[in-house]
Image (tube, rainbow, N blue to C red; front, side, top):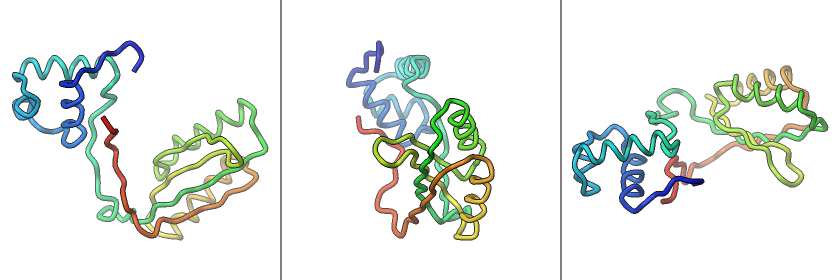
Length: 154
């Protein structure tokens, strides 16, 4: 965590915020054993230090007709800065893509996306290959989600 010191109270605050970031400061303070103002100061310090990057609402993908999770494995023969810039911009510009990682080993990139169904995945795939040159694309589709969390282990 670089030059940021996180103590046990900060860890409890972060755990609580990962569980429910919308809870009132009074409730959060009660749960971690601090006053409202002391809690607010700690949360603000964690935000200013960049430990808390943002607070978001987690949505139910099934209720939004985004029930299919796909992991896309991408290989490329291009590793120059211009290609990487185009690829990264493409990843950021496609809202279906939730995360993209540069990998070690035989696989160059692993991408996680959410779409409605197979035709929606095909449309995503077609847009992807039109925007960026790749040598191989493979996809694996999630049959059952056993665990999916945004909470980091503290």
